[in-house]
Amino acid sequence: MNKSKTYTMKFKTTFLSLMLMILCSAAFSQQPIQAVAPQTNPQPEQKPAISLKFESTTKEFGDIKHNVPASIEFTFTNVSKTPQVIADVVKSCGCTQPEFSKEPILPGKNSVIKATYNAAAIGNFSKTLTVRTVDQEVYTLIIKGNVLPDPPAAPENTNK
Image 1 (cartoon, helix red, strand yellow):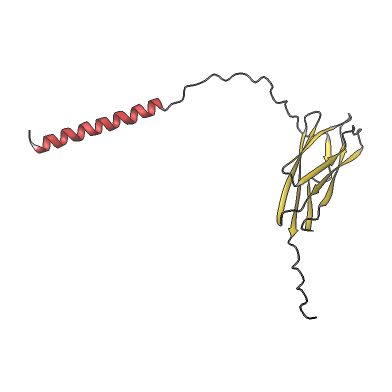
Image 2 (image 1 turned 30 degrees about the vertical axis):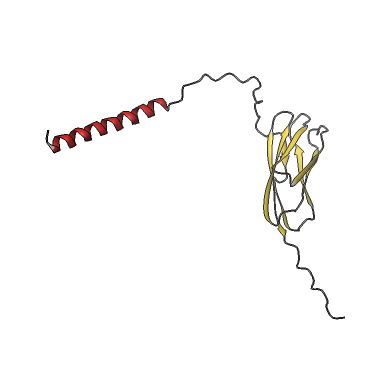
């Protein structure tokens, strides 16, 4: 056999082997389809948020001092025809502490959710509070602000 036919034969064999490896790896890498078991504890359906009307869903602290907790209140009104109860207020991080009443809010009455930010981290911040009612309504509240760095320490007096 001459060199050109040997080279062509090696090329074809190598090419076919490579193609076979690619096809096999693609075929065996496919994940089998698995049946999804029904959820035993499905999440409750969330209703659109319509019962509570907040004066504002975003509050701005402005500039606050480092390591000096600051609080702000979100006032809201029950605009529904039935008493409403706040089930939970979930904070986006440990730096924010919500306070709220678990007592029913009667139709037409106001209540507040207080948010206290610990101001431990210097710089701008934006945190969320997710409010859930017992009727599965969900509201998102946002607090924003800027924690100022500590002022520089006064120089020590070395003259005596």
